[in-house]
Length: 299
Image (cartoon, rainbow, N blue to C red):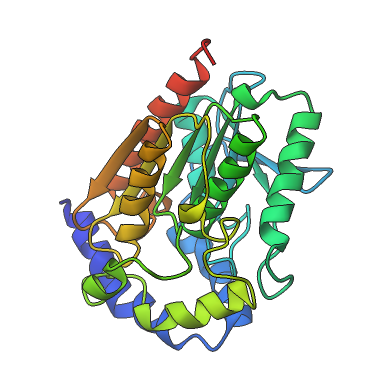
């Protein structure tokens, strides 16, 4: 483990985790992330962020292969975040892979209840396809809640026979029924996320919906004809089992699953690219995976 990661975990434990534990509500959480994202989500040079009609944000930081895209859904617990707060990690992934990122806006839970987010993601996918992108020219991606949302969309696309080339997700939130044992096992070990707020967050996000609705919790979804998936999670985070059990679920569906874990990296550590070398290393491996699946002409 690098000294930078040790310092980051210390800062998260002393500052971020207590702040998240006492944030009054979703509106304040959204404002906090909007305010602080530029400080901890560093941006590569030559970042280009264009918002085009239809709520699609196009993000890159260098030359990109034409007619290929990473369809990236940002994290933030469904109550915070946007393509702009997460443009740093998206731009870095674009630079490393040579593939432009298409990041849709989707409504936050306090703005529109479930299933508004997954419906918006599906509509944005349709808009991307309407621009001439075939499913095999696109890789789904996301972090945290956005990773779960990407997997929910993946299940829907697989069910329609429109599977993308693959998917890459970082620390995905996949089970809002909260049946993962790591919620208890890692409550103290997790340097970032306060487990005491998870049940409250689920109430905000899910409302009256069944917590194991596969559109909300992709762990309970089916994935017929699933393309390759790369899953990354930290072994000390409270959502560790959301990744571990999701990988097993996808393998049961016949998917080729690549897994990357880290014993001490915090939740969604690739967003800290520029601060910790572990983030850049994970993004490099994700970029190679993206290049590989997009280059697979057999799909």
